[in-house]
Length: 105
View 1 (cartoon, rainbow, N blue to C red):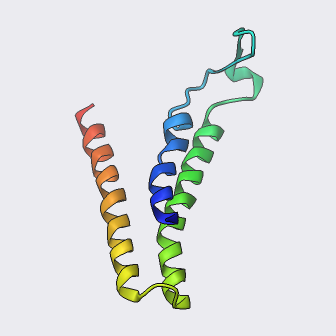
View 2: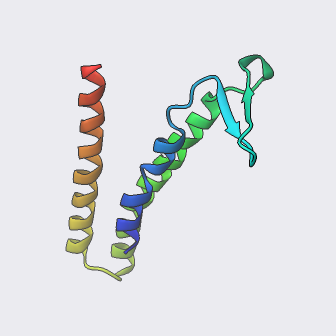
């Protein structure tokens, strides 16, 4: 059950923060817009970096959990292989879609 959860949670950091521009705006509770200007020392590159980093470790967990469970004997090695193949197919499809989408722009 842990691996399908990673399939769902892996794209969220990039979807939320992956395409942050240099002018990053935050809305307060009263819907007043506060914008951090690039000369204030804040830029969106750090948030973008951490979104990719977080997605990376979520993807690593989706490959590591089956390997650890197979190593400890909780699941059979064949089940581990199927889970790893499913992860490669799932993330490979997303990577291929991103590659094709970036080439068309």
